[in-house]
Length: 350
Image (cartoon, rainbow, N blue to C red; front, side, top):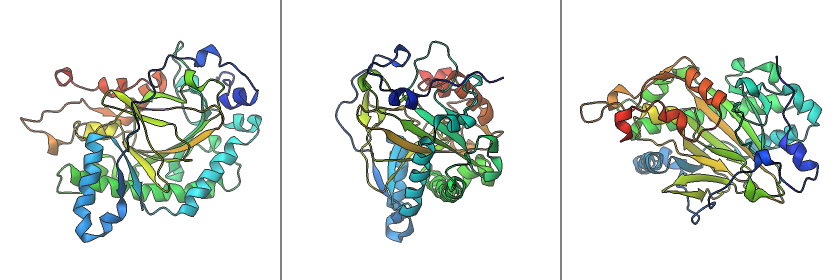
């Protein structure tokens, strides 16, 4: 049986509180050590003969050295992106009682639906944000009991966006296969289940906060899937951890943010990096983001690609199904890179 709904951060913010409740307060390190520009890559280069190899190299280098990059000329129409943002904002503008019809069972580690926390660790600090989570692609795998009936065009928009993201993901996985030196550009796609791959959405809403320096919108973590493609509303707040410091990801108009997630780090035997990231909030404005989590089939067994293993390059990670991996992730909650480190062989940690 599901417990009563959690307190929603949006409701807290709209109540006019002046002091943040203690369960959200956490000590923060300095937010950044100077801004740094995550690589911005023009995907149009993949369609131009004399730029294709250069573009592949830029993407693989960013995946290896940053774990994050931004893409422009990605092929998704601006008009569709505007519609995705519009239906997301419309959902969070719904009355609370209507959103609660789709509440998830967060205490059981099930993120599907409307929620405010990840996992059920009793003493964990809470994040200053609410979210909506479900499968977007393929539509047949959605939990329709948690699928919003309003706004009325939510399904139509998500169908279109899910298909576009699926096509973009396949292109990126082909490029990342090439970046690993693999002759067959479809290796990564095939190891994750081929046409059966799933795409999940997490729409994040970070309300204004009276004391933003005391909270986080989203705790430090790496993503449990394979690749994440993020759309945001141009309000700053996303940070990545690099070279011992938290760095702001600068907004680039029309760009999507791509980050390597845990399953791709494992498949690449550590060449591609799934890096820590987190979200900050603001005092006088809200922030929204739309994360599309591209994932293998739940039953797919993920381990380092055999093509990358030899006497000089032993496997750095053990094998796990995505289903088991995500069960631990959503039960324990956001835990830095603790989840992927549990699969790392002890000899590789030294």
